[in-house]
Length: 341
Image 1 (cartoon, rainbow, N blue to C red):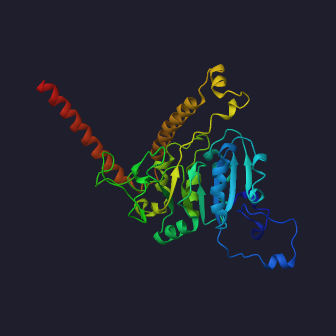
Image 2: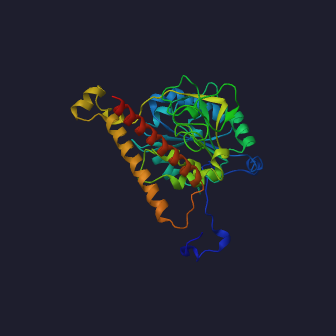
Image 3: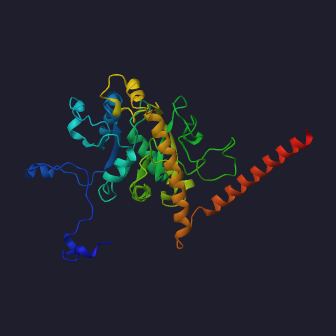
């Protein structure tokens, strides 16, 4: 949709999109002839700090081997420290101190800028990729028609929050998990199906167009988004969202944000005590606050938009009904125990 401010331009000269590909200052006819315009394009965007340089180097080299465009978000302000890496000049470097992955993504991965990329990998920096191959991963994604996905987590990973993300050794991929208190056989929807976590999501072009609009500009930690990403799956989230077991990663769970502000003091712990602030605690508190705001904002938006029909409303109603029944059963059991006593 074009704004009226563009009416003064001939339609054929309006380009509403861009990309992140490097362009030479000049090129010969020979160089132009080598350009393969039909080549597939994929993007790896990853927030990085110099302390994780070695691990990021390992990740990037795997993706470069598959002709990915690389975009690094430097949250610690240190760009020069990467200059000795062979691929450094092939990557796009964005610098903003103490900002999160979702802050960067909202500002620098607008759908119009990344529209040429078939798949966008928006990953954390603390992922082990010894058992992961981007090319083989995408073959599975394409063959199964997954719009949103993530590689499975090695069971020995740190910080596993949802069973659906854990690797199933006997499968190539899976779309749901069942069993346990949260995911009964008859439960549909996140976090039992239609779910990926925020550490290593992979989006198709269409899914990212939706997910970018879901990112709230002021809620920089992204908490709560994972439960709603299924709405961007371009259809049935129980079919179009999946976890790839064949190509899996290790989540190392390294805490990074919140330490950079203490860099001027050689003793980080002393610096935090001196200023009376435990930065990790404050970040978690802010994340929890943002989660509640996100939930409330979704509820308010759903009620206010009279034309919007929740495509998964039946799932939500069924789940709410089951949750209510469980609460009634627990209440009845507690009451029965008290009467027995």
